[in-house]
Image (tube, rainbow over all chains, first blue to last red; front, side):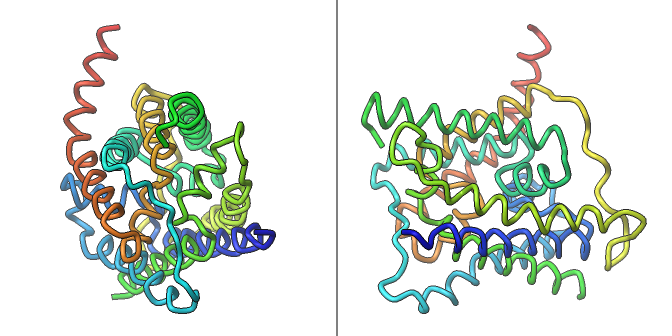
Length: 142
Length: 144
C-alpha cells in the first residue's frame, strides 16, 4: 500500500519515543531481546518487575489497538512448523549471543553511533538477506 | 513506582509503534530483506523514524542523570568480538526465515495464532541455551 511508509515512519517515531523514555527515565537501553532474555537466563533478577511491566506494555498495547483495524491484522506467519521452530531458536540464541536485536543494536545502538550496533545491524541484515535468497529463491521453502 | 510507570509507558509506546508500523506483518520484514524479489522499503522508514528521537535522547543524556536516579549506560565497548558477529549472523538467519524479531514476536503474540506461540516458545529455548552456547563459542574462538 502507498500509505505504508507513513505508518512506518509514525510507528518508528513511537518506538524511538519508547526508547527515549526508557533511557532518559530509567537510564536503560530499550532492547527487546535483552529485557526478555534477562528473565530467562536469570541475569535480570535485580530488576525483574521493571522488565515484566515493560513486556506487559508491548503485549497489551497491540491488543487494545487491534479492534480499530477492521478485519484484523494478518501477520502472514509461515505455517511450516519446522521453519518456525528453527527461526525461533536462531533468533533467541543469536540475539543473546550478540547481546542485542533490532531494537537494542539497531534503534538504540545506531542512534548512539555505536560501532558495535552498526556492525551487528549490517551482519544481521546481510544474514537475513542471504537467508531469503537461499530459502526463497533457490530452495523455495519460504 | 516511578520506575515501573516509566517502564510500562516505554513498553506501551514500543508495542504501539511496532503495531501501527506494520512490523508484526512478517511479509514486511521479509520484503525488506528480499532485494531480489518484491522489495518493501517500509522497515527503513520505521528504523529512520525510531532513530531520530533516540538520537536526540542520547544527546540529552549528556550532563544529566536518569529521572529515577542512578546513571546512564556506560559508553559502548569499541571492540568487535566473535560473539557480536556470530550472534548477529544467527539472529539474521532466523529473522529472515520467519520475518519476526523479538519485539514484534511479543507484540503480535495475542493475534499471531499457534505459529506465534510456537515461535515464542522456540525463541525462549534459544535464549535459555545461549549462555552455554556462548561458552562453547568462546572455547572455539580461543583455539583458532
